[in-house]
Length: 397
Image 1: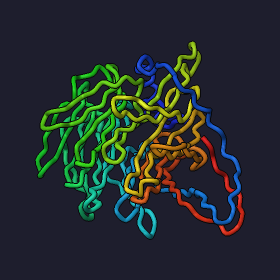
Image 2: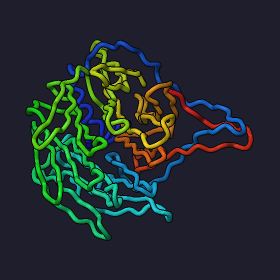
Image 3: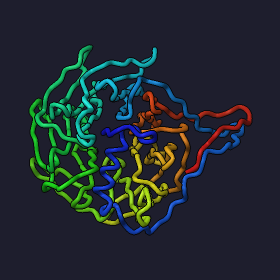
Image 4: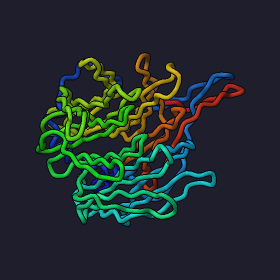
C-alpha cells in the first residue's frame, strides 16, 4: 500500500507513518530479548569446494514501490507493480528471453495512502496469474486473471485496503481485505462467490495477512486497535478467532502447511525524540499456546518493512523460514531460519525503499521484489562452488 514519496521509504512512508501514530500504544511492549544491531557487509573469503551464496538482480520496469511477487511451476517469477507517476498497474513475468511487461489496469493514487492495495497469486494447477486490486477512486475491488492473451476483470463490490489473495490446490480463490472497520473474507468455490466477516468490527486495523494450510483452509492474522489476533476458518461463516498477546504482527505464514509463524515488532519509547521508539523485529512461533521468539534486528525506527515465506517441500534438514527486511538505513537483510538451529543472515543488495516482497520456488530459492527509487528490481540467490579462493561481500545480521 502506498503513501507520499520519501527518500528512504518511497510511497510506503506516509502509510507506515500514519500506522505508527495510530498503533504506538499497541506497539509498545516489554523487550525480553535484545538483538544485535545490523552490521554492514564485509568481505569474506570462500575456498575451493565450499558453497557460496551469490545474489543477482534484474530491472523489470519503472515504478514498483508497491509490488507483489509469485513463482510459477517452471521456477519463473511473476510480479505486479504500481507506476505511481502514471496511475497504472503493471504485470510482468520472466521468460527465457527476458521480462515481459504489460499495462493491465488503472491504479489511481489520489486516494488516502491506506486505501491503496494490490496482490498477486498463481493458480497452482496451471500457473494462471490472478491479480486483486482496489481502484481507490471508484472504491471498488477488482479481480483479474490471464487465461490466455487478454486480462479478464471482475468487480467484487466495495473496495478496502490490506488486501491478500491466495488460490488453493482445488482452484478456489480466497481474498481478505479490510472494508471500513470490517475484515471481509471472499471465497469463490465452484464458480460461486461467498462473503463472510471475520470477528467483530475493529476501530482500526493496520496489518492483515492471509495463508492457506495444507487442506486449503484459510488462516488470517493481523493487528488493530483491539489487539493482535489469529483466525482459522472452521466452516461456512464459522471462524475461530484467538486474541494474541503480542504487540504488532508484521508477517504471517504456515510452516509445513500447518504451524503458524509470525514476524513481530515490539517498541520501546525513546522519550519523545524522533523516531520515538526503539523497534525490535522477531521471528516467532505460537505452538502449544506458547510463544517462542527469536530476535532478528533492533534499532531506533518507526517500523520494519519486511516479508516472510516458508520452504517446506525439501528434505527435513533444509526446511526453513525465510525473511527479508529493511533496517533503519534502508539496507536490506535476508535471513534463513531453520525451526531448530542458528539464523543465517546475508545482505542481498545494497539499498531499497518502499515495499519488499519475497517468494520461494520449489527448491526454496528466494526471489525478492524491491524498489530502488526508480524501478522495480527482482533479485535472486543461488549457491555456487568456486574452483579457487575468492573474496565476496557477504553481510551479517
